[in-house]
Image (cartoon, rainbow, N blue to C red; front, side, top):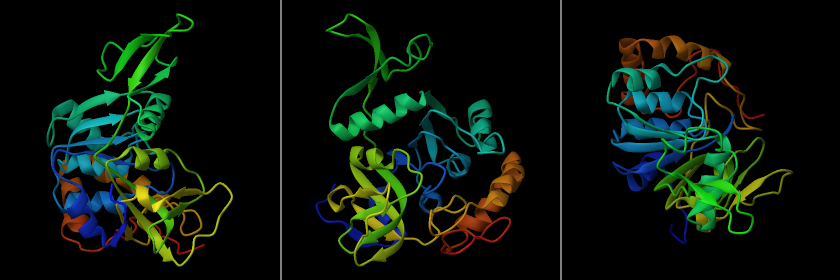
Length: 287
C-alpha cells in the first residue's frame, strides 16, 4: 500500500488497482456494500478474478454472470431476503458464462482469515470446523494440534487479497476514512490487502467521532473515490435507505440469461452513470 492516499475518480481507481487474475474482496455487511465499484469492474471487463466475500449477494451475481470471476471464496451466498443467486448457480451448475470454482468456509473461518491476514500471521486457529468435511475438501484448512493442551483444532490460512474495496460514509482530505452503523469485516479486509480502495459518500474537512464508528487510517488506503450512493441498492447509514424493490426485481432479471445480459448491457456496460438508478422505488437521499 502507498503511504499517501490518492483521491481520484472511481474509473481511475479501478483502472489503477484491479488487474486480471487478482484476488479481489468487496466487503460490506447489510449496508455499505461497494456495488458501484463492482459495476466499474464489469465495465472495465476484468477477467479471471478470484472474488472473495463473506456474504456474496447481487453484485457478485453480476460479476459472475458477466464472466469476470473464475473462483469464489465465501461463507454464504444469496439474494438477501429473496432467494438464490441465479447467475452464481448457472456458473456452478452449467459453466455459464464460464465455470466457477468454489471455496467454502464458515463465517467465523472467513472473518478469522481476514484477521490473520491483517495481523501479518500465516493462519488463524478455530474449533468451528471440527465435525465437518470441509477440512478434507478445502486446501486452505488443515488440522493442527495445540502444543499446550494436545487438543485437535483447525488452522485456516490467512487471507491477503490483492485488492480490497469497501464503501464508507466519509473520508477527509488526507484520506482517512470513517464508517459507522452495521459493520462487518471491512477494517480487516482493508488491513489485510495489498491495495485498497474506499468509495465514500462525501469528502469532509474533518472526521467527527461517532459511537461505534470505524476509522481506516490513510496509510491503509491506497485510493479514495467519491461515489454518492455507491452502495445502492444496499444503504449507507445516515445517507440512504435500502432499496428492497431492487432486490426483489433482481430475482426475475437474473433468472433468465438473455434478460440478465440485456439488463447489464443497458444499465452497466452502456451507461456511464454510477451508481445505477433504482429498479423499483426511488432511492432516498441523505438522512
